[in-house]
Image 1 (tube, rainbow, N blue to C red):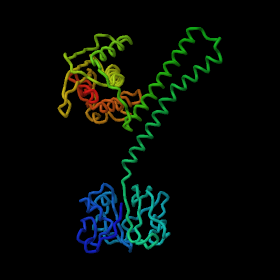
Image 2: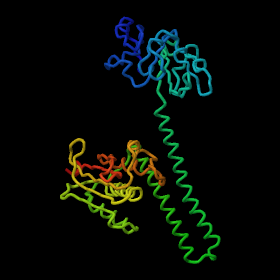
Image 3: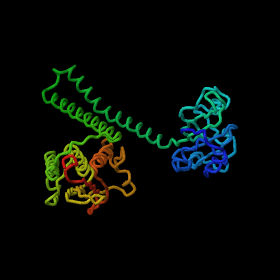
Image 4: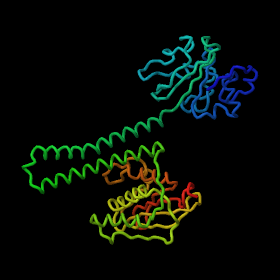
Length: 382
């Protein structure tokens, strides 16, 4: 926050936003110029005067600390915010803003505890009348740590999942290769082939997991790149069905309905293949009965033209209470298996294309996934 010093006391009292006492600090000059008040700030703002008494306590600070504004204004700062560090030491006693080093300008952001053990992120700025003069204002910023904790938990879950998923195939690869190297002459050709095929399959599994991790990184950082070109979505669906038939599925299990003519679709063919592969794999593995794939033109939410692909099955479907978690990380439904990252990546790919994806219940009672992509040539080709 930039602190102004050229404001008179009368002007300060005239501004007096509802989150502050009558002696509102000059530091709020810039907020007034922008037409906002401390209550408009997303983070908690607490300001104490030269005597250490609170003269500003905005709405976010009240929400984070569960202290009413009326109970904060005019009281000593250390009583309104009885902060402790993670080792249980009183923070104000350690930092001593009014009696500490005269060259200190504030405290960097750190995790501290409120009464009851609630964790908050706190940073402070000391406003002095001169570079080494007495502290005139202490400006404290408060931020809830819940969102950060959710992110940290998600990262921890990702690491644990990856470690678990990598351990099994790598153990298999190491075991078979070590056995073959040590006892090559003792095995028949058929036994050697079986071991090498297992190693190959496990190596492919590791490769897929690494690819998923890279996709998640690109989605989360907004760095997923698309190589748009014309895509024949009907031909792409046919290729995936043929792959399932070649793997042992009955051709009668698949029903394809494609509307003709379809508008031109410009997308990244590799990414669209990834979406189709995941949705069809889920329908085949977790669903039952006929797997129906429908491709038709459909408008997006903004009423622009689009192509919609619907994949549905006749299995038990997804419970209503789980619908909102389907596209989150690690969701696996009632059946275990896989990393639970596939649908999260699918949603990210569709949204990077500017499309939407939904999940619901099919007419036959199973799960129904529907994604819609915008059509037409990209702007740089027009």
